[in-house]
Image (cartoon, rainbow, N blue to C red):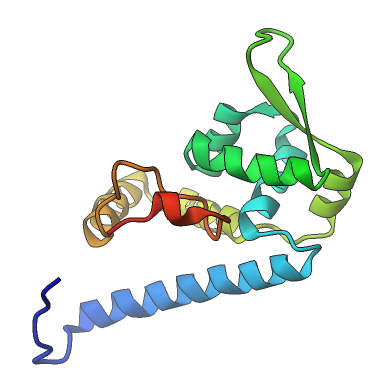
Length: 168
C-alpha cells in the first residue's frame, strides 16, 4: 500500500472535517464506554433495546430500518441480546416464517436504565437538517470512507464481531 508524502498543512476545510470527525468518534466512544458499564451492553445493543422499547415488537428487517443498518448486522446484535435474556423471539402472527423480536422484562429494565443512544441523537441531528444537505453529506462521506470489503454491509457502531463489515 503506497502513500504520498506529507508536504503541507491541510486546507482549513480539511481541518474542520477532521475536527468534526474527531468529535463524532469521541461521542461514539464515550457512548460505547457508558454502555460497557451498563451490564456489559454494547452501544449497538443499547440502540436496539431503545428502538424496541419505543416501537414495540419488530421483525429483523424493520429493526434494521429503524437502526439504519443491515439486517445481518442487526441479527448479530439480536442474537447477543437473546443470549442475555433481554429480548425474546416469537413467530410473526401474519407470516409464521418471520420472527418478531420483543423486549423481555429484563430488556425493558435495561433500556430504561440507559441514556438515549448516541446513534439516535445523530439521527435526530440529521432529521433537523435540510434533506438536500443530508443527501450531499451522505454522498461526500461515502467518497471519504474506504471501499466496502467484499460487498459486506457495514456493522452497527461498536458491534461485536464487526470484522465482517470492514471497509478498506
